Image 1: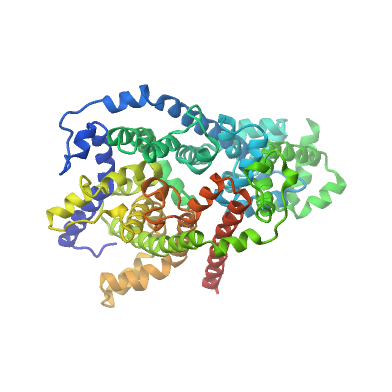
Image 2 (image 1 turned 180 degrees about the vertical axis):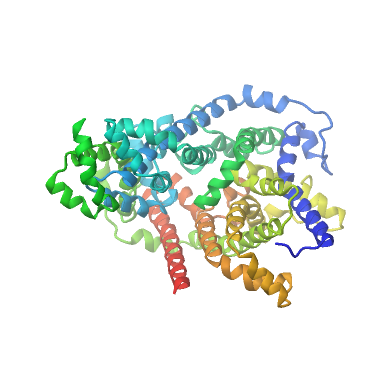
Length: 275
Length: 322
């Protein structure tokens, strides 16, 4: 909007820059803190730059504590959940948008109806179900309930609705089977929507806390957030260096991925309105 | 494949809507059966997983909430007794849950307007025509949103440490003796709210930025010619046009905040003196004590509030269209 003069523009830049520094300071503090010793982190007043930078915290996370395992668990669960959502949700989204079959409206109504149901409503019966299936404290117990979701279907359906129907008709005339049409004609066109859904799903899974906290019960199945939360409230509560390094390990991979894909990401948020 | 060729002209007239499905089903155009089968096969994996892991638990949670099921009943499901609304009655009489409900209301009623204000301010500032570093600011403001709440809660606990924390150090520079933020019944909840605002305003900001694109430039120019200053233009031009967006974002943010859990879990464990325990956290605690029926009833109460908030959104949004 044009009405801003040069002088007030400088004020605006100053204000925005101060705000930006305030917003990202916790991250800088976290990363710098992960290289500090425990003694330095307890120092009053606190130091900004590490005085004796050390990798000891990270070394301990991976040797004494099992952060390697937690990292692997988080990655496996997030990858499986993402692949599941991309595949199954695009299949349903396509079917709902392009194909005619009995029960279609009912399925779509079901999906819309459950779009708003939060995890806190279902976790108790879900836990009983998973317990009866013998999947408590296993990786499948962590990812199976999240392989599909109403949000992904909704997103995919909206996107497929924007594709021309003639594409499918033409492929049928050429003699392609219905599955070939989906996998070879439609799926490649869905790339932008798949990227958006993929990033959102991966992040959601990586940062998910309540369900893994409920299902994972030993060191072998903890995900990163669960392990970090339990360490930070348990016997390692005072191990400031370890906790800062742990937080860095949870946040940093996501931060890197985000910086690479940020444009697509922010467009995805703006169009779907849901994080 | 002659069937495909012959079916496509027949489908052309009906392809505008599914209203014709009934007719085509009875006349059985050759392609329709194929399409029907493909539709079901493509939906089947989703329906199975969704039915088992979402629909079934949703239905079951209603039943759980009217029984006295506990963790001891996992292997003997027939010993569970029907208790009607006893669990709900217990919830309303439970002083800790009432405290948790009040805390949650505090968190939502202060947190949502604050988040909206910060987000709107950031969006408007980024939309004033600054060109340099615009995407850098946007990226920076958005970054907290993608991070794990558990991880940032751990970091904020150190930031808010009474002695070696950054916040009190900075306050000390200007002569303020900062409190023991997370150890005080007065300051613990505002601290959690501050972190939630910091963590979440980026999402709302991005949506507001998209919404601001739909505010016509001419309206601003006309108002400026009429002598309206920047603030008046913001209140009288920008806000009314953004109203549906503001409402939408408020509701989605409120739904998220109504379930806040990680913040007290990591930063305060619900303390001091239950001053930060949230409804979700108390539900989780009851679950971990093995009181499944009670936890199911509590989670249903949270869901009820979320459903009401959602319904209000639709009401307000449709009023706007009148």
